[in-house]
Length: 361
Image (tube, rainbow, N blue to C red):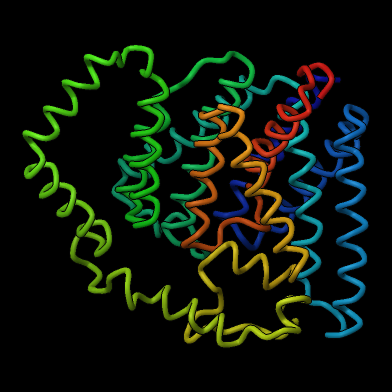
């Protein structure tokens, strides 16, 4: 049965990846949904606590949906899709948690790298990968799968991989997603410290600080120049962080927000934030769909993320915070096809807190 699940897991994820390229092919989305629902039902037997969590979440979503529909009227297709995606992602996350998927995850990561390598060698840009998605989406998917490779390897082998962070930097600069560039650099630096911390003696740290002080002007000049280039996409954009297009979009979101929309989310009419149909922020987008329930879920996600820090699970904390930070400047999370990666890490945090062995998760 595990072999069948392994195959279905790979097929489901590949279908999801292909759906971002061929967005009109609903068969690919149906395969992803079908596999996710099957994996959810199959893994429902493993942990009573996680089962209760899923039941509470399902009841909360049903009650919230009923109230929202009573107030706003019949929902649109996107609303229904997002609510179903929550549980589809749980299916993939539970499969990652309960059975060793290192081999399958590495195969998927290899396929993604081969595809992008061929794409780059042919001279294409990230924006040409799909007619429906920007380079930011490509960048997020790559960083998310890099995080997944690191997290699954550490979960089952307690080995810290470093190469996914290097590859993330390369893809981030190729796709020219400014948020992705910054996040990939942070991922690289912190993962480097975690990976090689045992070699960093007090003497080594002292020499590093002295060398940093001596070269401080050079380091500052290079850092400022690099950051400026990232923010302006190497001169192709003239906006900055203050007064940027995203800042204007977020201001529009807050201007439209009221008490009713805060508790029930926004209604089902097509949204427009200045000149954009999306808010370019996964946290705000979650509140738009899920209202106060989304805010509560986000607070729980942040709690269990920082709980990893308290439990000294630094690598898992890094993985979670990298995905969350990447979702702050683009609508790529809550709810999307790759939320199962973040859910997997949050479930690890829960099981670490419950002190359950892996066999009983």
